Image 1 (cartoon, one colour):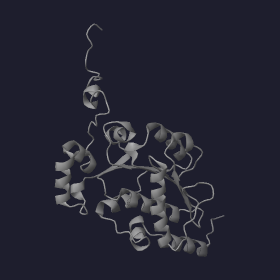
Image 2 (cartoon, rainbow, N blue to C red):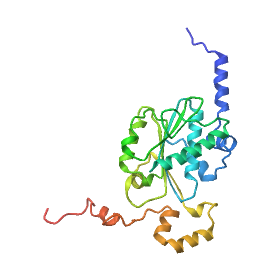
Image 3 (cartoon, rainbow, N blue to C red):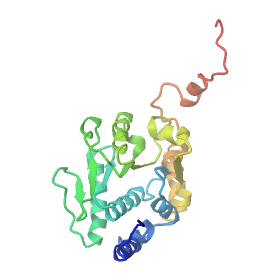
Length: 260
């Protein structure tokens, strides 16, 4: 016997798909957020692994909040997790996401289980995590994991979060301004592999940051700090006894150690 199809059901599914806008259209028309070209690139991306290395004040948290709300809105009963270095920063992120949810004519409310959270009518949740590895375990089937200010999140936290993506085959995005040549954010940017979509946005490519301000910042803070905070450069920040470059060079496999 041949397969039979319910034309009404097919039509309904097609109409539902048509009603779901892409993330950029959703941000503009539903959330009232006008992304610039690079922000739109991040919103539009369907990469499973993404890393954003950007200047201060570019709007990475706002862009990530729009991405989180879009995922939660279009995918019923999905779980979006947001990790940051501190509980206060996670709360600020959820506040931004809550403002976007309000634009959807949805009254923001918590999920009843997590202090920093949003529950949507379709059962999706956006949960902000505290900044310690010991208190983040227990989540599973995560659809989207966002790590904001990732360069300042501890490696132990990162390792505790990654297994939460396994069951749901979730997406992972890291977003940060650099913080020295150390940690998982630096290592992923440098050697993460081809599976990572890399996006870098220095201040000179952000129209919202004026040239005169940047000139003043470079004079005031110095080239190294300016390079890291505004130009997306990974610099040795003085926290290591030895600079990262010479240490890495010392482990060159082509160097023969005398006496061996």
